[in-house]
Amino acid sequence: MSRITTMTVRLKGPLSDFVADKIGENGAYDNVSEYIRDLIRRDKERTEAETFERLKTELSRAFAEPESSYITLTAADIIARNKG
Image: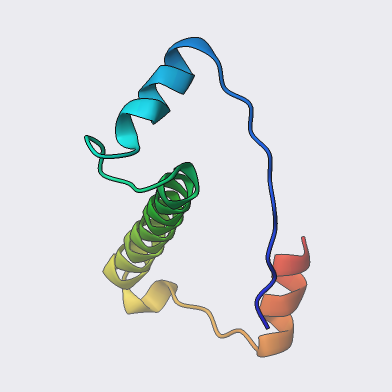
């Protein structure tokens, strides 16, 4: 079930002007909420893409290692290692 969160953000000066330019007839968004939701979605997508790229890099390095360097781990070994 989705949760609705109401937030209040106060902007003034250049930031307020910048947001105002994005809203209304000349802007790309109908209202401030739409603009903020889009910013959050884009940031979420960027964060997920960065995480995926880090995972791909880590996996590429792991698969580039010679098979003789592999060690056998159980699920318990991995859980214990990740607990820190």
